[in-house]
Amino acid sequence: MSGTTGADAGGRFAVPVVDISGWSGGTAAGRALIAADVDRAARTVGFLQIRGHGIPDGVVRDFAAALDAFFALPLEEKKRLRPPSPGVTADTPRRAPSNSA
Image 1 (spheres, helix red, strand yellow):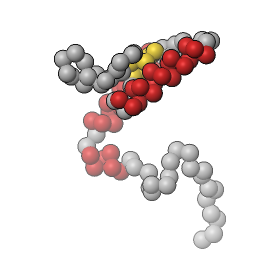
Image 2 (cartoon, rainbow, N blue to C red):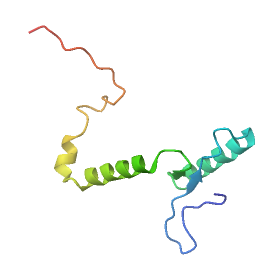
Image 3 (cartoon, rainbow, N blue to C red):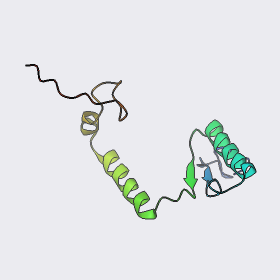
Image 4 (spheres, rainbow, N blue to C red):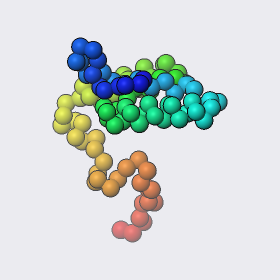
């Protein structure tokens, strides 16, 4: 991925692609190169596409379909799917319901 700027030869936006297949079982030097590619992509473009992750193609397709379905929803419906407050995330511990009435 060396030299990634976020634009292709025609000046169009290009998403950097980083192959991480060499991470597991790879050498420290190989992992350092992968880390440098991720760092470069994050600093120059802000995001990247990861290849060689080992996630089955069917799972990737299902995830992409779910994303497409969500973003196709009307804005008002998407807004209803927001967390109840900014402090609530998937990692927020759940409390048992209170029995006091």
